[in-house]
Image 1: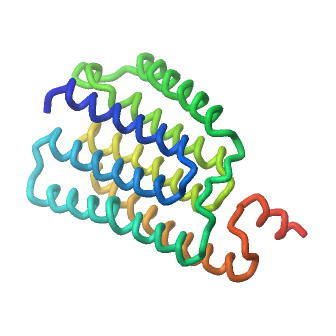
Image 2: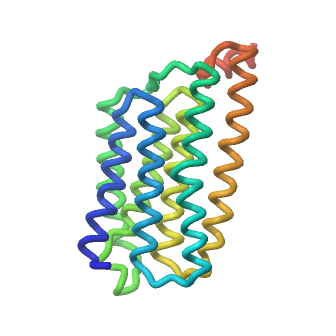
Length: 214
């Protein structure tokens, strides 16, 4: 794939992160992250020559990222009757400004790293850092437990960018391991939120911590 075209698609990843940061609807954010995951998988698939085994692995990851995990999260949100608002600890505009600084910092860090010549023309590394920091910021800036899961999925997408586009295909198995861990985390969070809602009738992580301390 042409480097400029790849960079354009990678920039869409950052725009999706910004959309999630500015969104106040949980289900919209979940669908955006699902789209981001599928976009990254297709981009990784088209950017390299793959054998049949890797093509199968890409297909499995698309199903998990694009359908299984978002379906489970949306089902949990609706079943537990979670309020659709994000309830930010940090306002939407400040969050976007902080994330903008994170993106600038990511590009700066990438220029200081000793990258191979074939990787200097692409923006894979700065987008990896920008996506990783975006996931961390979402975990910090939002109160609800389910939004923390969304932040972890963004960070998992960052790991996918690095493992599938920058390194050799041998490390692709590492991505499978991380992806399965994320899927297990979604399952566990679904069970936890279901029990929390039935006992505390609130899914706000800050209030839950206060209740547990008392």
